[in-house]
Image 1 (cartoon, protein in one colour):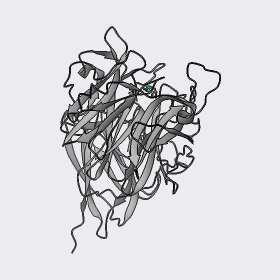
Image 2 (cartoon, protein in one colour; image 1 turned 45 degrees about the vertical axis):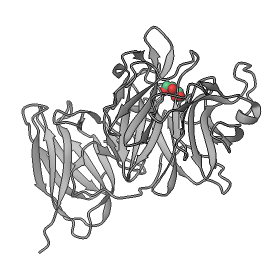
Image 3 (cartoon, protein in one colour; image 1 turned 30 degrees about the vertical axis):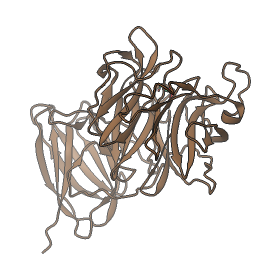
Length: 443
Ligand code: FUB
């Protein structure tokens, strides 16, 4: 088991490589849609999009893949940067893909739930120009007009109709003038004379429209422009995040949640990370009084909790603040479970509030086709006080789930909890679906 030197919260997801973050708030929950770089990729090998959610910004629940390029009959691959938005109780997910026998084009998929499944209502792309139709970003203005921007090396937009799956053909597809005043000056590349590269993220705050984008070519930084209007003219405002982090691309996703402003991006910070095996991270920031961005740097610490986890409710095992060694997969009981659990792996959940009474029992739903193993429950640090040890038996099959219960030491207040896994030195020990503590009955 590797020792933790400090509490890391970036990258946000450790069970797979994630890229191109697209956060969305719905109700009291923040959803994080990401691209998914396949393990060992040496190109943008990306087949599906992923969805995670949180209510506290530090524990993220894995919802699996709500959408894949195979859900579009017209696509042949390349599930690149997308964005999802809620409107009229439906969720619209705009995504670029390579067309069968053609080039990249932007499609749309619709769902009644933020976690999908999403389906293609059109059966064909929503927009395509034939030139770099990637990285759609969507925003619905206060007057109800929705805009879809996208593109590399050009920046295009359409005005979406209220159905969100068609656009105003009178306005058509508009190419944004990439001028030096609007997007800064690039030297040495006459075909890309401004800093704009790709990955736009479009929104409005306090009456000012923001276009945040990957800039300056390869390697990219993140820069921004603003406008008093949704369709420009734009004014270049500078670099937000310099080139850092071991990935030659970057991609912004900006959102306000529970009174804070968050800047999502990606880098190559996970072990094995690179420009093709990227990971989504997040930093908290404050706008300047005039709406300007501060310069932001990538950190391992990430952001602080804005809520607590209730350990007395059912918690999905794939709700994770930090994990080492494990993976997630579709569960035979529905949803997702944690798998690839080997000796020495662990999961941390953060900001767990045991209240004043505290627990006396721990329940966990597990399956093991091998010999099982042990879960140790440590408090505050990886090697902190041990409050429980649960023996997971062999259950005969990986989909033969059993609820295992064990007494635990009482603990009160808010803590980091580490589930550390022990057993045979090689091979997977068990899978986990969900867990919960049971509160001590007050005498
Ligand atoms: O993830 C594939 C591509 O790399 C995205 O579409 C670009 O924005 C860049 O991040």
